[in-house]
Image 1: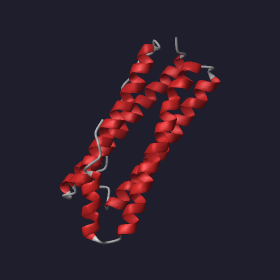
Image 2: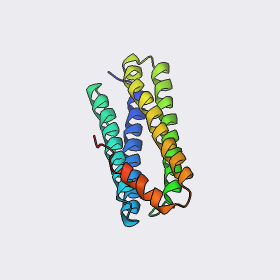
Image 3: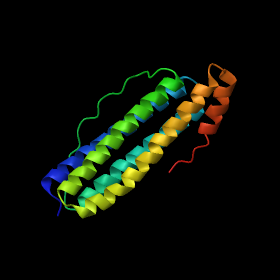
Length: 164
């Protein structure tokens, strides 16, 4: 059985993951409107990934005898700026997710909840990848400058991201 404190914190993280998914879907909508289908595809894949992260925590909490309480998801901004600005927002957001996962891990240590510590290790490793992906795309966008044809090449490459 999981402690009430740990269950509440995990439930909040489920909501944060689902809110993250919603944010990325909104970014994907902007890229669709901007005729950047590869960027839109990347964001929709990110939406699916964040949803799966939320469900991974949801199922874990249920398996441990806890219950998720779903909260309202705030409406994301309708515009996020240039592709570079969008990915800088993605990186900042992923750093917040990393901090939240680390806080959960610290709580699991304080609660001596070894099963949750083990479960959260996957998320810690995943966040390293999430931040690296955003950083890599930011570096590529910065290198492109205002060369629209190179942006279209990157758009094509991002459209090749595998979903799932």
